[in-house]
Amino acid sequence: MTKFILDIDDKITPGFTNFKEANIRGIRNTLNTQAALTRRNAVKTIKQDFTLRNTFTVRQIQFDKTSETDISRMEAVIGATKRAAYMELQETGGQRPDSDGRTAIGQDDARIAGSGKKPVSKSLYMRRVGKKIVKGPFKKNLKTSRSKTVAAMFVAEKKKLFVKRNNNIYKVRSIFKSGNKVNANLTHIYNIQTGPIIIKSEPWLLPATFKPARDGANIYKSQMKKLWKDGDLI
Image (cartoon, rainbow, N blue to C red; front, side):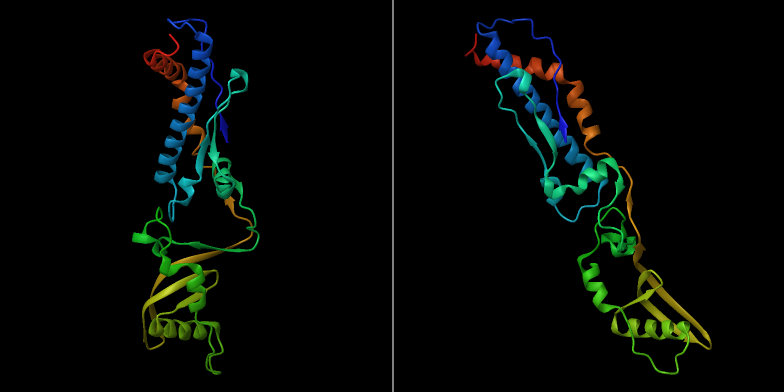
């Protein structure tokens, strides 16, 4: 969450008969404009730098206008709603809550167009893949883990299922056996991570404030000109 504090010279009275009221409106409009511009910048950054399944996240980036008449109490606030509280962790970095167990991380081949910047394809959501992992049973004469893995891959290829090897899940595109040698073409779908997941800081809000904050004085002048043109305070 970011709050704007405006530092401007309001001692000049450019032709207003009621400059006090004009100044109040000008500062209020400036803060609200800065918040709106910051939201626009933040949404642009999120769309460019983050993997989004839908528009939910950007819709949760919102700002509250100030309606105060006391300049000292004015503040316009911009940030993510509680429903998108995970964006705070993206901003600051740190351990993802409730990540001490097992977490499935979608690999590039599980994502749309095979791109790490795209979300996981709906057909490969973990809740669907998890139900299609080959788990046996196998013939009693398959005593080694290798023989069981090979058997599972043949089943997965034939029935269009998935296999799990160590902490990874694969789709078997093709497999054939020549003598004692087995050749399989696997697509890596998920990596299962255990323990806490640490999110690297990837600021999206702070950089969005830089230009609106820097342009504060010019935005104020523009807002005062608009009020002057309206003429109700001259």
